[in-house]
Amino acid sequence: MNRWAEINTFIMVVEEAGFAPAAKRLGVAPSSVSRLIASLEARLDVRLMNRTTRRFTLTDAGEMLYLQGRKALNLFEEAEAEARGVTGSISGHLSLYCDPALTHTAMELVRSAHQKAPDLSITIENLTTGHSPDDLDLLLTTLPEVEGLRRRQVAEFDLVTVASDSYLQGKEPIQTPGALQHHNCITQSGDSRYANWLFHIGGEEAAPLHVQGKISTGSLINLHQAVRCGLGIAQLPRFIVQHDLASGQLLEILPDYRSTTVVPLYACYPNQPQTPAKTRMMLDLLSEAFAPE
Image 1 (tube, rainbow, N blue to C red):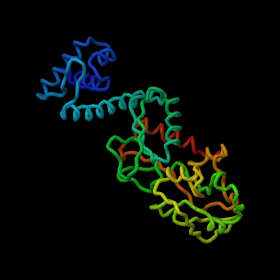
Image 2: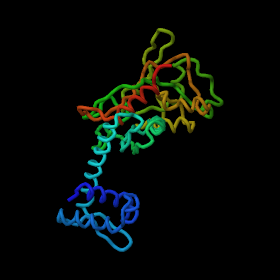
Image 3: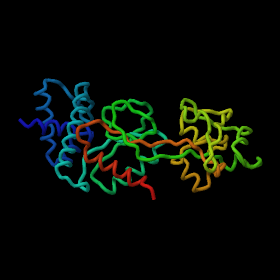
Image 4: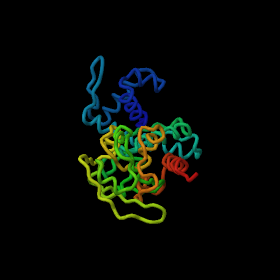
């Protein structure tokens, strides 16, 4: 009895959304697929699929078996990749999560990973809480701590004071931080790092500046969009606005007065005795991407 063939066939049927496509992917006859699924249901004594002539739906038992079976298949593929011991042959699947504000950074990482390991499939999801999902392999976050995960700081970004040209048109030039008190400053709620704006010029640090405005948000994404729409002035991590600054869509305010607040970028991953090769590769790519020039 080949239990592996049964489970693998079942997973292929679900992912290919049909018996015939699964048979084509596995290189077998459709009748072999039907026979293995029937054997699996008979051995488990449970119905896994409700089938019609055109489609099928998973039962609760089928859904549970697929999720657990896919995890087991991922581990098997990772074990094969480890046995090969060659970075360029890494395959299998990696679940990459990120803070919504880090989506662009995550996409750049995936592009580098695809060039180095084209056989590795990657799922990208946003994570908005401090609790990691069960299928997480790697998380990019600015959160200081994520429950149950190891972490490595891979970069550190300063905050940049920015505004759009549409907001600045017709207004007096902003020469000192104190002038910000006469402007609509868009603030981020719920994060103490953004409660006061801190500046220094040369080696001297100025007193914290409590800015005010008519707009606030708990999301860096919303903060970014608000300042791009010309609603006011904001402080944002450089990794979020660097492309806007390069294109001229946003302008840096008070470039001689640097913010003393920094935002670390962390790579977090499951606490395991041995970090999988696919995760080590991603960590290496992050280190290369943010290495000092």
